[in-house]
Image (cartoon, rainbow, N blue to C red):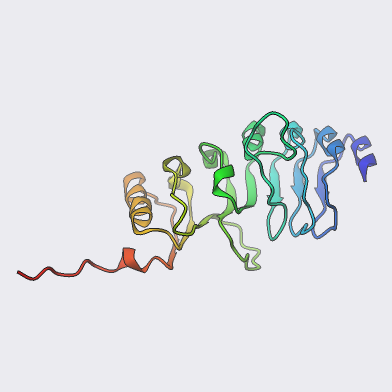
Length: 205
C-alpha cells in the first residue's frame, strides 16, 4: 500500500474497515486529497506524525467507530500523530472523530470553521447513523476534570450529549449554552448526571 504515494492526483482515499495497522507515511504525499476515511479500522495503531498535517487540501476526515485511538500530545520524537495537526488543515470542513483520552485534546477544538462534525470524547459505542449533524458528545468518568478550554464556539452545535459528568461540569455546559445563545441546538441529552438534574433538598428550620 506504500505505493499509494505515487498517486499524486488522488482526491478520495477510503480505507474504511480495512485491517491496516499503520497508515503509510506516503499518504502524506497526497496533497490533493480532499477526503480520508479511516472509519472502522480496528487494527490501526499508528498514524505517523505530520502525515495528516501535510494534506493541505483535505476537506473531510473520518477517524471513528472503533478506529485509531493512539493520539499523542505534540512532542518531539512522538510515534503517533497529535490532534494539533488538524489545526493545520485550512480546508477542513467535515470531521468525524472519536477521542478516548481527554488529555490528548488540543487547546480549543477548532469547531468554528467546521460545517459539520461528529466528535465524541470518552468511551462510546457509536450507533450506526447516516445523519450528519454538528454533533458533540462528551462522556467522562468522575475522576477526570472537565477542562475550561474544551468548550469553544457552541453556537453551531446541533446535537449535544453529556454522560457521566460531575454536577459542576453539567452546570458549566448549561451556563455556556445560555451565554452564547446556542440557536442551532436541536438535541440535548444528559445521561448519568442525575445529581445535576435534581433540585437541592429543602432545608428545614
